[in-house]
Image 1 (cartoon, rainbow, N blue to C red):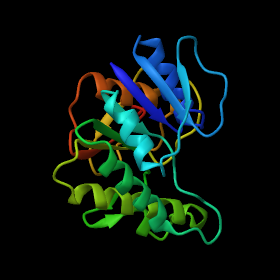
Image 2 (tube, rainbow, N blue to C red):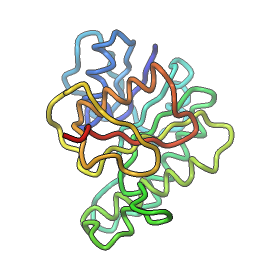
Image 3 (cartoon, rainbow, N blue to C red):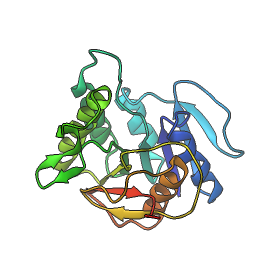
Image 4 (cartoon, rainbow, N blue to C red):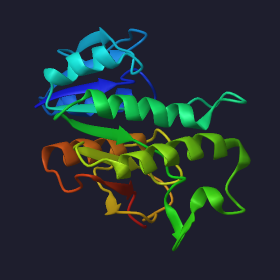
Length: 206
């Protein structure tokens, strides 16, 4: 499979690149800054805001993955990330799009998102709202082959256990390592089960 990964040198993207390459996929790693990559992975300069560039990459890929998150700088516009996702969705054409999203839009109760609960940390609200708006946009599309993957609320780099549990719109656990998140995402690319919808993954309960 030909997989193009934007944000490939970031905290999440680098794990996706490693997992996809480990399984023998043809990986194009796209970012604005070059970094050390697994053997056989091609790096290209890539900017999600460049719609023509995204379209060109998508035309030669089976799937485009965006692992580029919204800005957490004070005062950043939460809608900017959603506008970027909208631009990418319009640029990929018939190529499948998988968006790495956030946990804040997961439902703590029917109709109540985690980001809207009193205990949700203030320092993460801006990013959570931005990723939630992006998900809302994708849900309005009818001609985009999209999937949105939300991690568990706690999402550290850690250890690849090889195990995870899957849900849809509500959390299925408190945490997942970046390594197991990458495994879940590449599993979904190889064996699609969540097309034009959102799903979430977490570490199994002890």
